[in-house]
Length: 104
Image 1 (cartoon, one colour):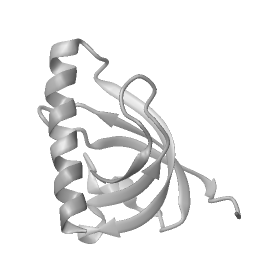
Image 2 (tube, rainbow, N blue to C red; image 1 turned 90 degrees about the vertical axis):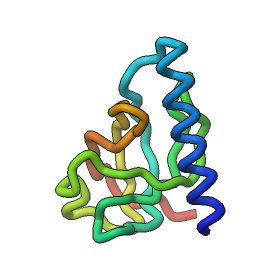
Image 3 (cartoon, rainbow, N blue to C red; image 1 turned 135 degrees about the vertical axis):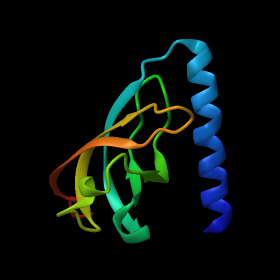
Image 4 (cartoon, rainbow, N blue to C red; image 1 turned 90 degrees about the horizontal axis):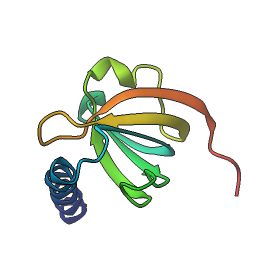
């Protein structure tokens, strides 16, 4: 898991540098399922669909711009969320619960 977290962090930093140079929008929205809530609610691990034209779908951790954003969220919740560039980071700046994960 540490290896995954380090790779995800490196990917986020690389994307931040690339988008700063490529003129991509500063915010991106997609949907996903919360897999884990870490650091007392400051970080959500989300299995997300692609951010069109920005990032492929994957499972990765996202920091929150405001820890209050995680209030009322649980593992298994299906969410729509927005990440916004803040310096070199891409934290979640908006998130809303849109239901439970569909049964397989």
